[in-house]
Image (cartoon, rainbow, N blue to C red; front, side, top):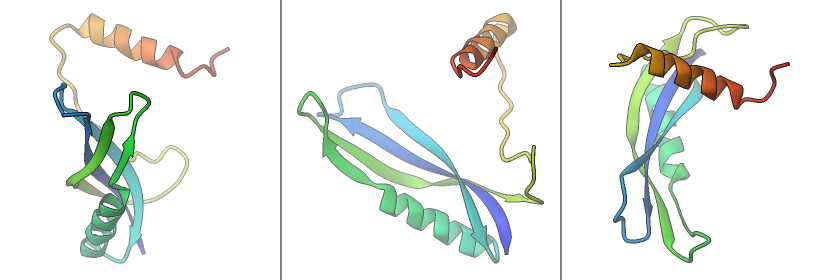
Length: 111
């Protein structure tokens, strides 16, 4: 068996949908014999992850599966194994660095 990281994308629609488009990108760990089986498993996870419910404002909310946007093979599993990366170009590098430090501070496990 091989290990894969799949990016599964959902669209979130609240109420009548008159809001900024929201997408949930989930990274899922998949065990499969090959890429085809991994894609099929990830696709099924997406289909099963669709949901509809009513929020606290009594509006309908839909979690719509869009697709499996990425599928990456993991060479090995172990402490510190890279699961995913994304290169981000920022017009203001200091603002991006400040954002990264801010997000890190919200994790709450620092001494």
